[in-house]
Amino acid sequence: MDERTKQRFYSSAAWRKLRLYKLSIDPLCQCEVCNLMCKDTIADEVHHIKTIDSNEGWERRQDITNLMSVNHSCHTRITLDENKQHNKFLKQLKFKYIENKKDIERLNFITSQTLDESKRGEGGSSGT
Ligand SMILES: [Zn+2]
Image: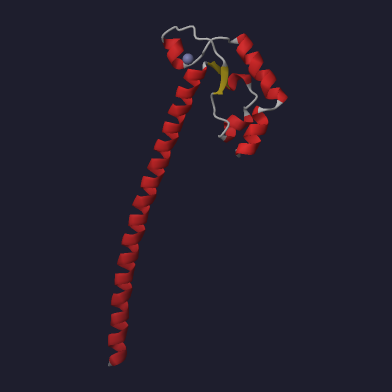
């Protein structure tokens, strides 16, 4: 989803209303860490479990079951973790791409060698 569409959504009255509603029914942070430590941290932000950057998350941007009340500091941590996961994924992709590129270069090398050999063969036959 592009930034402008996202911004428009975040500033929409519908989202602001839904956000306040979510915070009113779940006023405490629902993040894993707070849950695990049974910490009663006041939630002041609402997090999309499925990020609105994904198609599913965007479809479910106003779905209350895709929302999580979180505290600002927990939200920062969650976003950082998600980005880390994302970067890891990108790195893997890049690695795969490089591996593929090597394969292609190897293939090109082999093909060019075979082509050279066949050319040499043709040249020999035309000489006689
Ligand atoms: Zn938390």
